[in-house]
Length: 493
Image 1: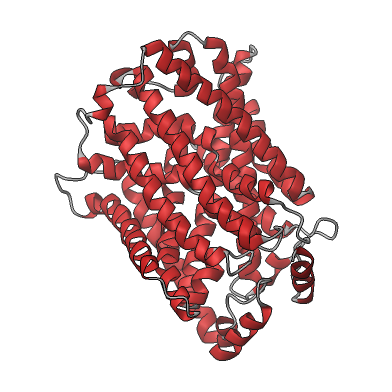
Image 2: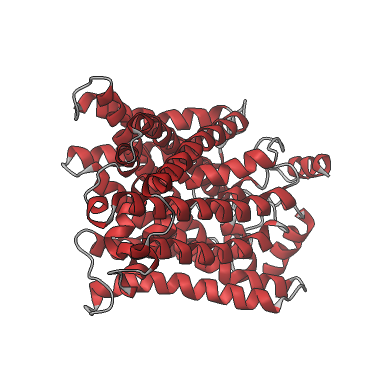
């Protein structure tokens, strides 16, 4: 089967390297893009500031919602193997306009997630170097960390995807294991696992729990990125959907354990004042030396996540370029590794330059990381909402109508829209239910809407100037069934 799929890939003009990735490497893409240890470095604290003792519930509800999205994505992944993932999938069900919006949203998501990772790499890398006696806040060192955090993953992504996927997975696995040891130490230190303040939601408000879900969802974004390896994975119809669902479920449980343990270990007041929660928590429970290993693990996790963002984001640009929805130069691939080199550097350069520019302007790296993460989440959420809506429609289109898919897909799409709405409405319509957003968070929904409008305008320009491009959108690089893709393109024409 794998050999046949490789032949199809060559015959259909796919320029990515042949199917070399087994299930571990495909799973590694989703896990590394989620960057669980990096996500747990600061996101629980940011969610806690909104949700209080309901932070674990913000994450718990997010697990359910994103498993719903994962189920919808898996319906496509078992039937369509493409580097364009959500863009191609949504196009097949809802048309090229919606597909373009999904792809445009994911580009925003991967880019700004990468920026947040570069910032995180600098934060924890700088802390590590301070531990070795370097003075904190050295601008030369910080600048070098930005360059290493943003450009070194690009070099690795262009060189060999198989090695880079394995390295990312190993780094993340070691870091996750160390953090779980810390969580066990918290429970031992406190003499049990029951925290009545959290379980009774003391002081938590429903509005805060819902608002906190945006950054809780950000902890999961990237679980879908295994879909971008549809052309490079062995047996993609099996390995890709499994990676999407498994990564979301398993890492979701890890998040619940760690969020609960952090609040339980610190207590309400102390947690709100923490600057580097996980390393500081190690000191609280008497394992101060473990904090250094945690900091190393988080730094490596940030690097792995930046690498995963480049891998997924570049393949999205590659697909859009091949379909004519972006300039053709995005389709250029390396002669030696067949990696989409131009697309990789197109993501890596702004991923490195933007955070450096903000910091030079005087912004705080930790706060900026939260801001970029929030903006990235909005981009992912539009793609998640569209794929949830698209799944039941696509199944009906191919004669596999499933009533459960309609229920799950509709719920997933509505939920994503609702979470965005409650984060936008306090800015537009002040109310007593959802907390008002402070600057610059109150501007981020409008930045996202502006990005979406820009994508729509670009799409409409192409639609009216090159209608043949729009008619063929979403058909490049589908190695699962080239004949069906060609038939669909002819039908649109």
